Image (cartoon, rainbow, N blue to C red; front, side, top):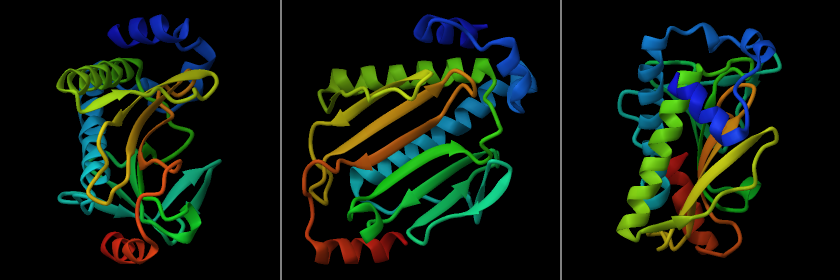
Length: 211
């Protein structure tokens, strides 16, 4: 129930009956929603830590994924990206090494491994609440500030930026996108591309350490 209430309050309406019957995860029992949400948040924390500290992604306990399913087809990942999943293979964490393809900026994103999946509304509510709590705590500490991204329509986005650059000299941003049909679109953590932050030679070394 909490997931339905939170989503309705933020985007002006819950998931419609058509949407709920169209996606796979809507039949997930309510008692599994908290487990799914916890796994999502745990991977999100790994992403944010890697980007904000300029350290390699913590892959302890994770398994590497070779592809994502998009429009019913398996899609290979670009050479500068690596995908990982934990106990729930429906959630995938993707680490982007700095490369020519992305302008020599590093990123990390969290999304559903199959774009036909949807997230149980109760899990959405828990994840949304945890993001708001995380942001409030960081704002209270003075280490971050609110920076909501442009929404993915139909849906909305929440975000925050680190006030200080990471050890590579890059300012970083965190964004969470919620989708009215699937519940969650994606979470991203990445170095901001509007300001230069490292020399090319450093990028080359950094790419080797994260590839």
